[in-house]
Length: 436
Image (cartoon, rainbow, N blue to C red; front, side, top):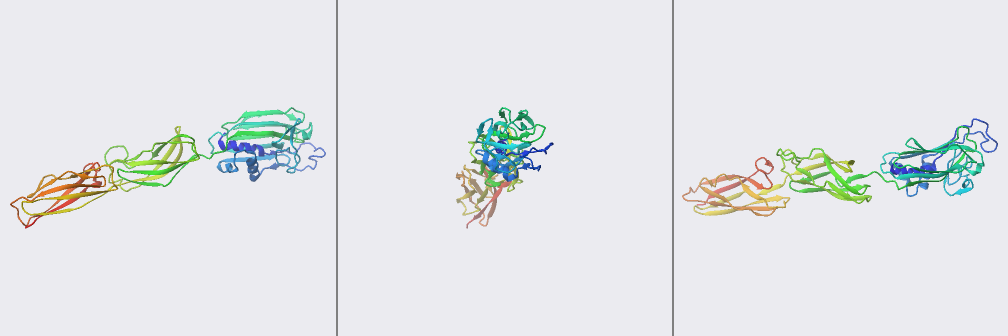
């Protein structure tokens, strides 16, 4: 049976009541002589109170996670740890079967039923039900009842007809992984006179109820810069110990090329949990591909799905976005006299920084622009700023009024991948002039 169910079972059992059919013959003198209906049905509060009192280590809050208990009794309320007595509450005596006194149990009256039903509970928590059953000694050799136990509609125990003169019977049945339990006492088909029935020492072997596993995140969206990583703080609630597999379902930003692999990559595909009630782990994504125009600065909704043993446990909506790096540079102006050679430094700033030093590439098709000879040098710097020297020669003869404005396409190897990766295509302006 399911975990909470088990817990409830214990409680319910002890709290159940019995429904009584109207006698078909005249009532005897004394007990039942008023001819009135004294059947009883447990209220929700009574059911929860009995459940909390009788279920060791279990909580009445279990009723909030898919557990329901109904109970009826034929002559007054179900009595906790005493016999049925008469129709008033609290008028029973110590539970006694064939001279043996029991400190715990439920005193009911035929017809009665305790019905425990659990939903949304997955972990078997109750494994066995045990009790001694019989007609309480307070009615002597009178009474006639039948005890029955059902699990998911299957009868696990049937005592046959028992009277006050019958020997006590012991119940010990397995109920693991069952979600619907019924504990029934009938009037044996004749009448309910003196049918004071005891579930003596009734107990369920259970572990405390546990809520279903769930996952929460510290945020619902993640903006990751190209060539960087971003992390969700994920808290796993009530997960069992062991590996939890993580995957995404839905469209992730893709590279601008025909490569089917998403540019946004889930790095954390498995976490190992200890079984604590709450554990927080990092779930990391990396924007590792070449960002494309269509996917830049756009959130994509996907589902983050957890599973254990090939069974999905939870699914949470998230939104992922890959943002381009910010690249800034200085436009340059070079002035020189005829016959001179001048050098300027092109500086490129990268934000946020990358973890390698890119090489600057300039789209120089020819080393000569008009009369000028332009030669780029070697890139230096780091992942946040790189520089490249550009040497300009002013050869003679040269018209003194000559001015050139040259534009070059800027590229950073390892960040851009050529003309198809247009996100970082920028032009550098180089203004050249001759001094008199």
